[in-house]
Length: 85
Image (tube, rainbow, N blue to C red; front, side, top):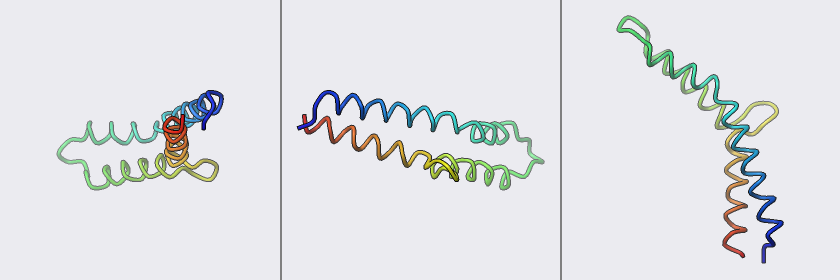
């Protein structure tokens, strides 16, 4: 059975991971804005490719972090603890 301390710790981890993912989304927002601001003579294919690359970086992380994968694991653990209590 999960203690309140376990649940609180897991929620803190989810919150931290969420903040890291949101912070890493800067390049994604820039890429999306470039698509939004595109005119008919812009190469949409390449602009969308940049969105795709930025989204992958947020999802999978980089050399140091694991991106939203860490958040997903932390969230799963937190939800499991909630159902245990």
